[in-house]
Image (cartoon, rainbow, N blue to C red; front, top):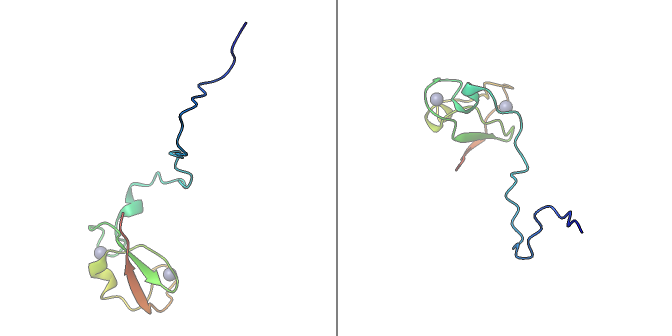
Length: 79
Ligand SMILES: [Zn+2]
Ligand SMILES: [Zn+2]
């Protein structure tokens, strides 16, 4: 008699800890502001939704450094 169940536990509150969304983030600079190259990225531009800047730099920018769309609004990112 072989029980070929692989670790099936009856007590398993619907936890889904396998973080689904993880795009290839291997770049070290992926979380560094592209303007000052110093602060971590913590702001997203609206409406283009690019997030490549820290809040300090974003507050002085008028155009998105990526797509050069006009920045109407900035929104803080909380990680
Ligand atoms: Zn910056
Ligand atoms: Zn943009």
